[in-house]
Image (cartoon, rainbow, N blue to C red; front, side):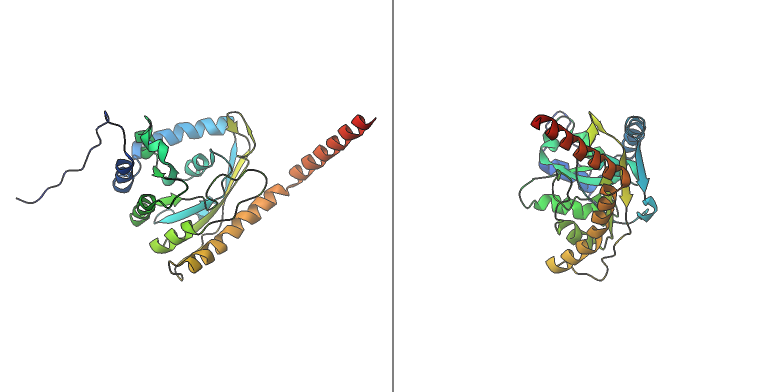
Length: 252
């Protein structure tokens, strides 16, 4: 008789392990119907309570492996990237999420675990598996959320994965999520830039730096344009004027 191997099914009565979470992410990916329902419902809520604008969505390839590289200001950033695209998007998240009661739902929505502060070989292998089956992966090159008005320096890891998979890098600029009215941000804009081909590069540190160096300026330039918009300049000037008035009043 042929050797027939049945898929391993997670026993929901047992806690999810890191290894099991990676297996599910590599072999199964998102749950199509569940992903669609959650995305539709959450999208409606966000549009009603937040309001957000999407630009350049036509720049995102509709099929084939891609690595989206957004800036990272808020916990909410991955939600907006996933909501505006038709194709499912996969994200790395804290390994602790894989051990909680909601792990199976996070996995069904495209999450997979990564151990922060160390080189996580399991997370890298899962990222490679996602790209190998032609799916979309979003990685934040800054590595963590960056507070304040500036962007962080992009790391090379996302670009190296893209080169290994032959996947274009898609720059994405998220603005507005850092300023929120609890519990959700207000007036969010998500802008996708021109895809950056990695076909002429090899998976070396030098070429990975070259690739992210081609993609990231689109993010930083768009973020700078957002900061320099007329409304923001007027608000900053008003804040400076109010501060000066307060100082003069104290000195009287």
